[in-house]
Image 1 (cartoon, helix red, strand yellow):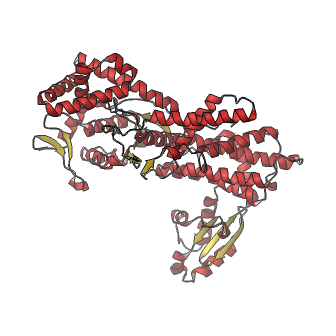
Image 2: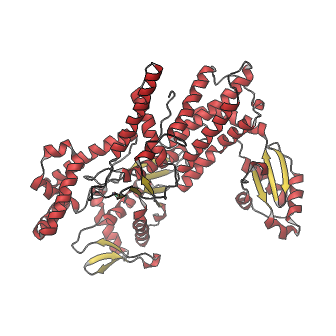
Length: 573
Ligand code: ARG
């Protein structure tokens, strides 16, 4: 598809540098902007910086350059004070978009810029034996969307779930299970039961130092691969993962690997050696730390005084493993903003170790979720299980559908499937609607309201277009005439469709799925305005088929956009 920005850069590169090189191509590209309103054109180029070079008033420069431009891509090039404003040739835009959709169909707008590059995306990474609560939905859904966005752009992604399945707390849990646990009871309700045991052992060790030693002992046995310890730990991991997998299934989210923290325990000795060798590791009160004052960061504790390694040590090993395994262009961690320091330290340590690939590590943080009654706290029992949120949303959609069945007196096919697609989609859409760094307060009312700018609204527009295409007998091979698309509503849709690729590219550069969420709303809105204003199924075959082709493009792009958010696009609603 023609790139209008590039065309402008071509033209200006030629015009401005006629007698002498005044601006490089990169400089020109970086100055081109999109004006705040359409009356000022589709693109604008300010010439302030040229006044000195040409020794002329900027408005005069703008006028002279604008007057000298004639291009098939722009129907008008005008100067307004110091700006050169470019108005896209509408016919050109219409034929570009319609040809692209005809030719590429489902692949409309895919630029393939990531071809040949690996990208690791880590997301969700809950701690086993702990609740999978709404605090985890963010990492899970944002990470999954980032993975889909990278895939769309042609990158080869590898998704990791870095399960929290290692650490001294498992010594405690093993002791608690051995003392008070009943496997049968746990099996029936794994996470809440394991949580109860964990809370109990935490209280007990406070009172009984000997018990604490016993827990330490069991963790040491686990580290030394003692059979009994390993078996119990494996069991805890298996039942937890079984629970988590229910949620991933509901969410339709998959992983390439569940290599959790425990996986890296075998890789840690080599990292500790490298830390020693590079001179980064220093003794401090019996423990071993890395000094990071060079980076303006507090020192990082690597090995505790009792010799045990910790969370960050496993992350060093994990980063190195991913590097060796995938040689990624980016190694992305979608983890909450509470861990910003952790990842800054991790990068600092990797640098100190002499790993020249440390810049591939990218932390993508997001804000916290709180409950109306306060921060989430598993200890205090303030948890909302993610599974409950998802199930409730699906239930609510089902109720709405049942009511509709009663009103219409006819059954909805695939009611279950549809309820899942809409209910889960609504939760995801809301989750991905704002800039990720913003904190928010979870509210049942808001989550279960489907009014306004919501997933169901966008899905509905998609379904409406599907039935419109069917009713109009749409066929991709029908003859069309792009020059018939002349109305403002049509132009606004064409412009929005044209922006799709740029929006996805921006979303991937800034790791912000909400660019796409907002975009799907904008496109759905533009379509609704069109639909309310224009009769699409009409006598005139050529005009009808051209309009249907435009509708088809909107449908595909909405579907693709929702797909990038991990949301399904049902054809009937
Ligand atoms: N398990 C951790 C938690 O629940 C998140 C892990 C993040 N990933 C990482 N590589 N450190 O807080």
